[in-house]
Length: 131
Image 1 (cartoon, rainbow, N blue to C red):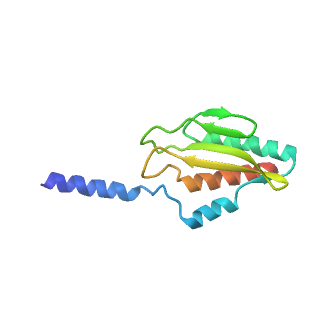
Image 2: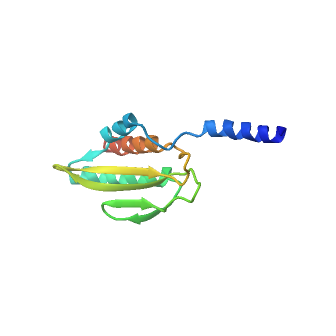
Image 3: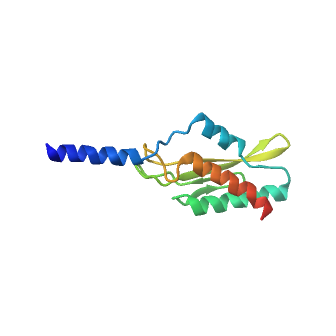
């Protein structure tokens, strides 16, 4: 009985350390507000190159598909907390948006947390114009 209670206590403690993989509406709004936008060809090329660098340096998986307007890593392994990532260059008004999406194979959440990774991606890509 003591072993069962100890195992339950440990699993509850460990479960409390895992963050949920679900983003709140406020977090999604923050992400959407920070999506990078480019207007000129050279600016878009620089930002798209930065998007690729960010994915290579921050995803737990290698790139599987790369085109001039789409990149995606391999899918995550079941239960893995490492993030997989996808980015697309989408027309938006008179420019383009670089939209990123992070996910993992763990139902309890990703490391880093999905919305934090996507906001970090947005910041890195946006800042690349000034480097």
